[in-house]
Image 1 (cartoon, rainbow, N blue to C red):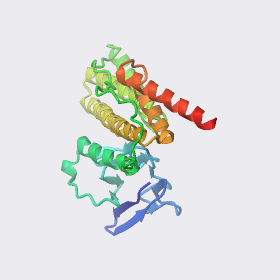
Image 2 (image 1 turned 30 degrees about the horizontal axis):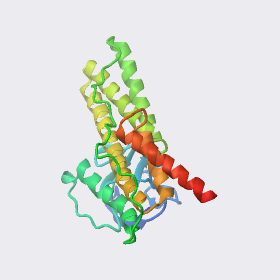
Image 3 (image 1 turned 60 degrees about the vertical axis):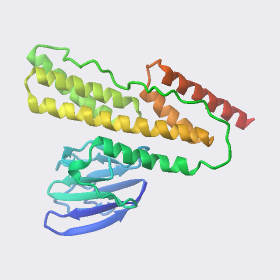
Image 4 (image 1 turned 180 degrees about the horizontal axis):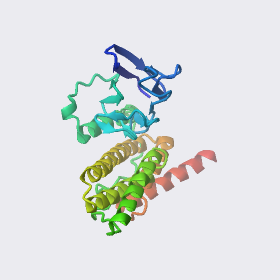
Length: 286
């Protein structure tokens, strides 16, 4: 994972700056932590930043005191060009150390983050493309699949007590699926659906705050999933140009998981590419 810079404003007013680089960066009060905070401000391990295909993944490890990233309660979120992490009374501005990106918080939206992270994801693949000619790979279809169901979610129960139980269960299911999504991309779609059902049930109960929170969780999950899909889609096409089948196989696996259950042109193209990679690996072993 690339180096990350941490500008820390401690609860007592002290300011500190540090840079860390590892596959897993830990923020907490433990002596082993890469970013160490006071014991009365953070747990032994409070937040972890982990290497992820689409960029650094910021994950909450301990729920108390509550952690937020850019004002949103933290479970697991991809880090954009920068992000403001709050743990209790401590503020930590996290920035990409190798990319000086001057971004105002009010102007950083999902589209800008997506563009910057897609560029970062493509750097490695584009750098490998040489001037020597390669056999033209199978062209990807221009039309992209719809990853998410456009049908509005509805609460499956109308009785208030039952609707409350469904809402709470679905929100918990969404949190669990979100935590698992870095390891199984299919969980991303499950998390979005659970959050949307929870939001619908909370609306039925006229619980505006809970409904808005569940809706926001679903929207964030959609943004993160679309970000990963777009980055891997573009990178896969470039990896095929340079015949890097090992990395291409990883992208095919994730893209296939994100489009599981679909039978459109893009899904058929992914299946063809997967078969070509399999054939190449068989030939390589012979």
